[in-house]
Image 1 (cartoon, rainbow, N blue to C red):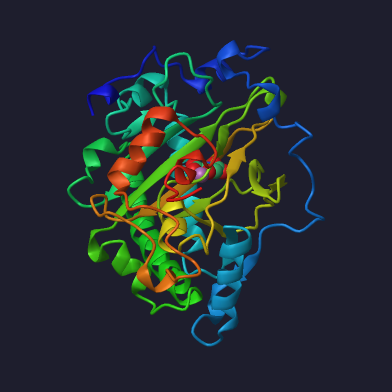
Image 2 (image 1 turned 180 degrees about the vertical axis):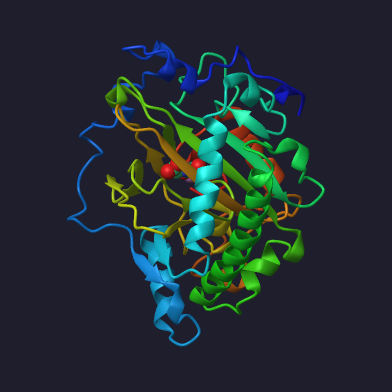
Amino acid sequence: MDCLQDWPEPVVRVQSISESGAQSIPERYVKPPSERPSDTSVCGDSGGAGIPVIDLSMLGRCSQTVRAVSDACREWGFFQVVNHGVSAELMRRARAVWKGFFHQPMDVKQRYANSPKTYEGYGSRLGIEKGAILDWGDYYFLHFRPLTLMSHEKWPSLPPSLSRATTDEYGRELTRLCGRVMRILSEGLGLEEGRLGAAFGGEEVGVCMRVNFYSKCPQPELTLGLSSHSDPGGITVLLVDDRVKGLQVRKDGAWVTVQPIADAFIVNVGDQIQVLSNAVYRSVEHRVLVSATDERLSMAFFYNPRSDLPLAPVPELVTPDRPALYQPMTFDEYRLFIRKRGPRGKSQVESLKTVE
Ligand code: OGA
Ligand code: NI
């Protein structure tokens, strides 16, 4: 991993540029016209439909829920969940704590500055390509599991102690929710409910979180908060800003803006679930737009397979009619791609294809 030792050029915090009052954005953040928010060749509207909304309160009593989740994972790769069992108070507290972190003075945040070696801590880019065009966002990345990677030292302690306790509680609750979602996803594939969890390595799963902070941007039409990508891991549970929109999901070539619902989570399928399901479920490209008038905070919670296990389509989903579409690869190997090259649409999972 020598190539991942350090950033290729000095790190600039997007929040510092934003707060400097600049009226235009530096060249480094200007996207080519085809990637800008307004590009009409890919923008469209999906006839008003948004990503499916699923109520988890009926789970276990009605097979409709499993069916709805399964359909959403096949058609959209995304859905929102309500009545998911995580307290709204905890969700609000977690958001408030992390807003508090990003509003600390810069020298406090800089104590947690990250490097591309592990990405843990306060960061402002993904990928280490010199001269790359950057996204308009800063983030904080931390691990919950495995316990050998979890280190409270690497979590911010400000605002006072509350933040670590809240982040711990959030991690526990969301890990539990991800376990439930994994069981629903298994059933939706016609598998036994523990099947995908077992393929992930049982207790040895990886759990981590990226808190994204998108500062106000003087020229939001020229850039993106996060470039188009599919999530490399298993499943992602995203808590978005309660007021400010920004997330867009690719559907049939068009970008669909997600309308946040109060106290809901957005769940999406990552590349590893696409691989295990032999592409029955799809990891779908998404991106983030920024705003001239509002900052936005989101918390992306990632539930990943054990990192040293080679993953390939589960044998039950491989048939003579539908041979295995992907070759086995460990998540450690897989993740290096994004850590070196940054967000690149779906090119990474495509590169695993066995044929074509
Ligand atoms: C991510 C992500 C979306 C958002 O962190 O992978 O897609 O709304 N975030 O910030
Ligand atoms: Ni994502």
